[in-house]
Length: 490
Image (tube, rainbow, N blue to C red; front, top):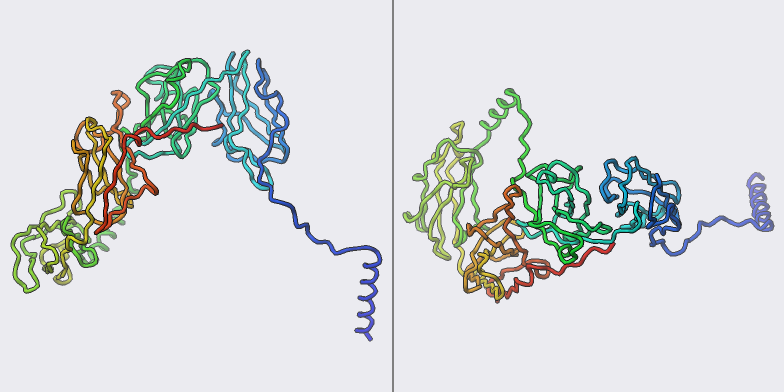
């Protein structure tokens, strides 16, 4: 009876819902996704106002907006002493400031990627609001490109800065009058500048945006610029350098007790030795390297033997300490290896002892075969347009950006490498002004520009050296020295 009554009740309720016109609520399927950024519909005072004397600006958009990283994204030009206070409420953004405005000056507020809509996060990119406290808006521009002198690359965290203070200490002690971000290609542009002379620099992204630390990336132009002379203010090239390397942070102070514990642990660790063989094969181009796991107190190279497969001792080899090693762990076996020959290197356990008089647990015998010439790639680079008077040097970098070779480009304008390790490489050319085969940094105090390195670009910027292949490349480097410049469009 209870089941029957429940069934009748359900039917009755369903009939009532149907007759009363009620329907089940279904979530809306929605229309196309909003991909458009907010649009400014009103500004008070109006954009490009002259004789500006207000204390705040109100910007109203066509939808609700958010503000993202205002302190990072917003650039006020000229630079103010205090950051303006920027707030938002629904569709409105309000800007207020404490500083007094300079007379007859054009101000610009570049919001970068600050303003976004609430729902989808669409960004209103590089929105700029401009006004003037005088009777006109300044419209002069300065544009250019900043490259890293040592690598030919770009550090997009850097800034271009302008100073109208020509004191040599201004760049060290004061903030710039104008600054601009650079894009991922190193390009920058200043807009709404007055007719004026400036000094231009590139600096690291610090609070004051000046050159207070000589271990930071920095660049300077050898001459002043004048916005009245347009040709001097466009396509400026700046080459950034570190005058001194960044200091490596020292490890935390370790107590005497901790040091003693570490010594005890090291004393118990076994001494081992490793090598740089590649799948049991020895390169014909580089020496065999031996690396011990701990610094050595003693090492007797005369105890180490090299034999052929028949056990015949080989005499024409030597073992030297690696001059670049400061830990007394690395040693080099120098020999004119014969291709396809098999060798045995016998390392007696008594040949080396660490600072705790620990030797190898047992003697180590390494059996390996020398590679043959067919394992290597033959490579040739032609530089038909290169300027030999600038002492160009070809730099070859491995795929993980380690410098593997520096080769002087001579009057033949060719580099031929009959045998080279196969693999993928990046190439650069160093213009070696002082002819010492290595990159030399700059010095602002002495007005010394750094030596310039140019990336040799091609699809993916990779050169693959392949055995038994035609590895010949013509490189019109002259065209690469001055890359096509595309100014930022704001």
